[in-house]
Image 1 (tube, rainbow, N blue to C red):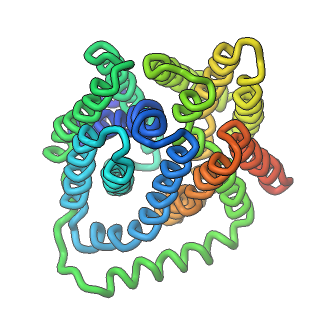
Image 2 (cartoon, helix red, strand yellow):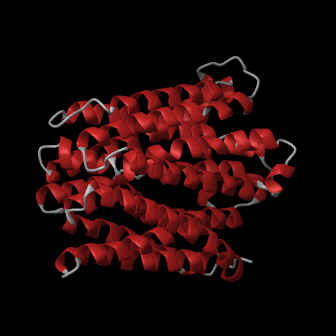
Image 3 (cartoon, rainbow, N blue to C red):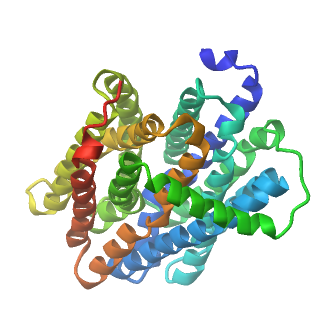
Length: 415
């Protein structure tokens, strides 16, 4: 494998292993198992549980967006990046383990533990991602990022298989134990990253570093506004990315609350969707080289809209679970290609001399409005139903598709 030919291969492997370590938190706690468990068992009813869960997802997005520039400045200018990475991992691991303790009715205990764990998880990802430019160059940044992404997929899948084999998924007490597995997994398997990924030499830090980080963000916004293709692509991405985030946060919740999936069925759904996501990313990686990232993004958005509409109509069919499985497989196949092609399109559009600056803004805009979809989903569920709330995803994806296909974005030629 070419990965092992890098001069800094030990650091690259250790950095990539962080995705392997943290993916089970996203897969098991956020998307498939604990979210559904909270709505079905801990909350008083599914509508209230869905609403409260989406509120916490929204709060996470806002807090991370506000903290990222400040802690990013501390990490970068002061040389505290590894310290913050370790601290974020410890907090996420601890509060993931603490999710074992809330039982039926202990709604705010569970939400508090999840909120702290989720914020720490997101901040840890920010700090880990910031090492990528240090470990790569323009020729191998995509390959290194891709290996880490693939390793994360393997980690999530293995954790799902392990949970299914060790625990009785239809027993609430057994489901709570999975949180301990996730926390311990994250903590232990992050150790290679802590040991072998080196930080910059620590510098003397002062308050001006925080001010300069916000000033830099302002300057980047002004600079990126002058590149109309990038600017308008990012606006389109704000919408369709919010749709994807809503799917990630609430897919398991919808399966349990509207289609009456058992927890074992949700676990199997998670396994199948992870396999589909990996297969889709691999397949469309080759297709992208043939037809271009723009066309793949269009295909993915079109199929994602169709799949969401299938998920919406599935409760009204004679075979609701079967139709939802079809929708889930389609969603799984297209989520990976949409994300990977968005990143590669951004790379193609960005001038080489501004890659670090613009990609930092790309990451920030991916988080800045990510509260919108889940929040709207929760509000509509509270006052109507989860099924009606799925229109939020359809509308966000559709707006993103329309904005993406404006002439100055659509006609970008990707070799």
